[in-house]
Length: 327
Ligand SMILES: [Zn+2]
Image 1 (cartoon, rainbow, N blue to C red):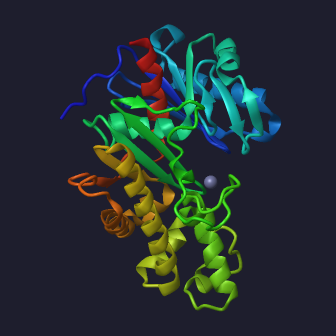
Image 2: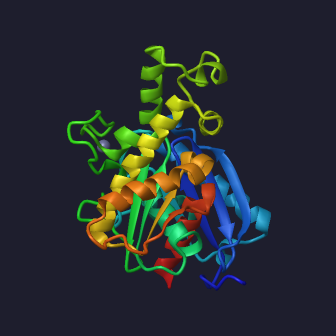
């Protein structure tokens, strides 16, 4: 089935991560026509990062033969809460940004209009428009990676909240007085179910001598445990890995129930590297836990689905977001 037309002209979406820039030029239906990947080089400062973004935009326009006048708009996702009125990135520890006026500076460089939002909000918008949430009005998204990002869309609009921190589902409290989170609180979902939390729990168990296939799979480096390694150990029946990942999925299920009990979405979408690797195994556990924690009929007939867009979700959502302002 042909995708419906979303934009009147091709759009550009940029995903600025902590370490990488991923840029897509998409046609009127959201199909990628050109892409560019480069390192963000955040340590060189904000203006250097913006220069690299500008050159990634040049790249995709050159590849597709488009000029500035052919492009409907540029959207950018940043790993930070964003003041939407000014397009200022408020706080991004990974990039060392605080109150950085990313929209104004990038527009000056590009001489094109730019719309900026938080990266995970845009990942959720991407899934809502072009991925697992197509055809719905209300969606909550969880993206499980190093941390856990979240996004909430109600009646087709991203929820930003009074202080631009709406949709931070990774920092809902799952375990009162639980493990310390990077945000300073205790017991956040991110502190119990993210890759950082999973690695912490695996390392603690391994240093207590609990047997696991990871001892062979990881050689001596236990600091970075890749999803592919976890997948192999999980599928081979490693009891430690299964117990820790199943518990993480169980906690994500509690967070799914919490947001469902709060806003009653049409669908909850879960993505990120861990679920790309082990979604088939973990989603049923998320579902079982959520079912146990829904308020009455809150979760009746509500799908809990794997994200579909993978690494392209944020850039696609950024393109969609840029168009929303123009139409
Ligand atoms: Zn937190």
